[in-house]
Image 1 (cartoon, chains in turn green, orange):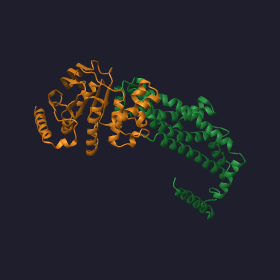
Image 2 (image 1 turned 90 degrees about the vertical axis):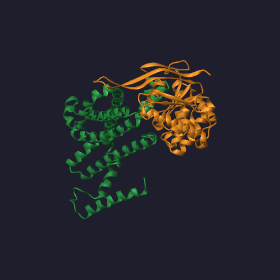
Image 3 (image 1 turned 180 degrees about the vertical axis):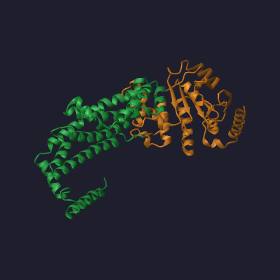
Image 4 (image 1 turned 60 degrees about the vertical axis):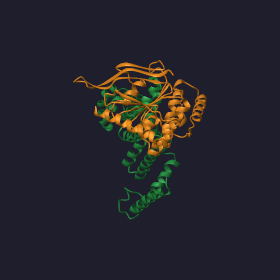
Length: 247
Length: 258
């Protein structure tokens, strides 16, 4: 990161402070940055936030991990065979076109209001994304590399483990990185609409209902920070591990 | 000297249109014997089936009819080195250069220490310098092709098949690589079958140039190249070379007229 990165946030805080100081917008809707920053410190200092943060992180990673466990093997299998990928293409595209939010009621019916319903929504959307990216990775392996391995008398298993799988890894990882962002969106939304006691989504929604506006902003910022950190971690891993991608 | 590669009555055609039951004949009645340690170039018009020819020799494609014997055995069971034109697409970018070269050994289950030793030994024998710990995409085109050549040679194959390997290189690198492959060929006493669509390259490298006809590929004629060895790029300006070149172009024109 260049050192100029700090200019944006400072400008943002200044404009925010100006808006609330000059009372251009109703101060109830936009409290001063100072109030929100103090509240931000408070929720951590008093330990109020941990239960919500951990609940969200737990659902996020549980759903995410399940999506990987389901998505990658399925994607590898479907991608390796032309018949399988052709026959599943329509179904996958169709299910991927269903907005996950449309499935909340269905998963509620199936699993009740517990964590299962929330995690299921995540798994439904994210495993489909990972399947698609994995299939794409497998299908787009360079024919020439497989040819070379064949000339070297490599058996099918070695071709898969030493050529096709490593070559599709950058695509798989791209799918995984996109899923973690989608998973966070879905967890927060499900927490708002599928009843729960803890969770950042629940905190945002409840503090809005109870007019604790600064708490609402704090929860929004924490969600944003969580998403940002996760995405950054994946980007860094991507550039370090898959430095060779597309070469 | 005994023949290293024997090709007898080779035919190959592809299904062009499954509904009309149309076939495209690509190779027709190709027979040739290549001596052990010989450098043979195959020259012909574009799209005449040269790549198909090498694919059959490497065992990637079965012939419709005819027989290929390499060192008395069928391709697919013998060790063959195959070098492609698009080298960057045949190297494994996720592997370091040393692991690219050692790939055939790894398939066999050779231990890591042994692989390392063999790669370094081979590089020394070939007189090539490659940054082993780096990755292929960080190398120049010529260096990448050297990695591919080293990888093909690590198992000491009976024959080395090369499909227009220097096409994607710039002029200067190409000259260097042509001399490099001649150097490697002499050091390893390899048998090389080299497909080219550059007549200068085909003559300069070869003991013998084989002319293919337009598709379907038949052998139009062969031409012995008696230029002295070791060859140097300067020979490309000699009268001897020009004589061979005009003869070759004459043959090629006849091939294209047919």
